[in-house]
Length: 293
Image (cartoon, rainbow, N blue to C red; front, side, top):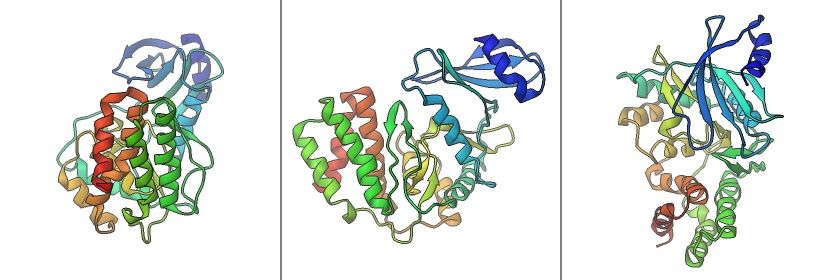
């Protein structure tokens, strides 16, 4: 694989480079990751998979990163440098960004940069191509109604996957259908335009660089309801309150976000149910009960 990497990186740096040594990093549940030290003194970040879940898995990720980089004052986005998805192993090589510990001002800085990202808009909710949330296909069929998009391309798509795999008990399935039928009662998106969002903004997908600039990565990008990104930051741990205060100051929300956030996160809980099994079922049922009793 090192020889393939060397060939792909030569046009990036304008000279022949080789991998001097590599250091494995934590990675995730899907891919393996390493930091590569090159013979020209540069470092790059490698994501690779001997058996990727989808043929275009890394190609779509690179496309998502380039979309997120549109915001001039938005978060820092690692640049995709090289891709191999036509052979195994498949891999994506990214600009290496060194992680630092968050300083006191990082949450507010992150909030303001995220608000700038969310100001990028489009005529429709969705995207001109499908992508992935984790390893699950994420449908992005474009829709002018944001509530209908969230209902049909997010909740109902995950519901169908769980139904087919037998992970959704009949009673829960019926209650989820009731919730989808009534969803316009719970989401206030008046004056909300389609916002370019990260799509999977849990705590493992952002950090400050050495200059405390917020960096985001591993996207499941689309034009959606921007509150979905904020809600995801609260699903598995929560940023300090000054993050949420600074975001509202930069880009005010409609009243009632606290009552809506669990509904956005139902999408991710259903996805975790589909990916990891029944340990997430009680969380799914708890959110459904909150809205339909």
